[in-house]
Length: 331
Image (tube, rainbow, N blue to C red; front, side, top):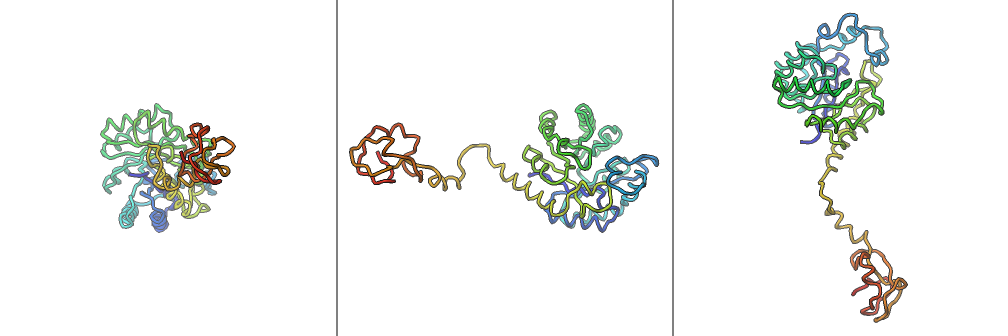
């Protein structure tokens, strides 16, 4: 199986099912494997007085509280069922991150068979235990985490019956500065936990996800939007439809380029080898019996004659026949 590419809608549907469906269409057109949403009941995840995160304040002009902002972006259970059915119809995997216990139960009832744990829930023990109880594979983002916190969360999931955990390097900032991505953590997570790894990419553009794949990422999660200028907390840190399409194409190209670890010429290289390599040839007309020296032989293309690596063996020998200038030397 190739890199699993998750197109993250998140809340970029702005609370509209019609926008969400358009985004599914865009993701399918781009060729992603999965379209992901966020499922929550606002009153279950945030207090009425909780302030917005700094990036949310920066990206939203309104003075709404975090509760009011989230409530305006919340979809109903009926709407999620409609979106899952639409994903099924379009032939793409439906995935949604639950942010509370009630939402986990709902997604289980919907038949979701992979669960995504967001960075903010890694220290939520009741949440992790319920996720593990589903006995489904888990993809877990690791933003804001110390290694020990990830280790504890993975242990809870595995002890609770989770059959497989994949870990995503993640920086919880929207957008993330390139200097804060820390792609080298991907290899560290793989080696330390012996699990499949990937990147939840919050940077602008697509190059960081491509680099992550080159470093061995098996899962890429990327926020996308129909338009970066739309009002909402995540639009500015998301890529637009053409960028999403370019990202998928680039990842597939990188996968194809992995090839084999054995260093040997490809079939196409063998076709080109004689044209690119050189042979020992006469640098002037040479009479039979003449001693071959650096003054009368040289190296030129094509490479179908004696290899220049035999230069020392040829020097000092006698010409076995008359050679014209540029004719390949024979022995």
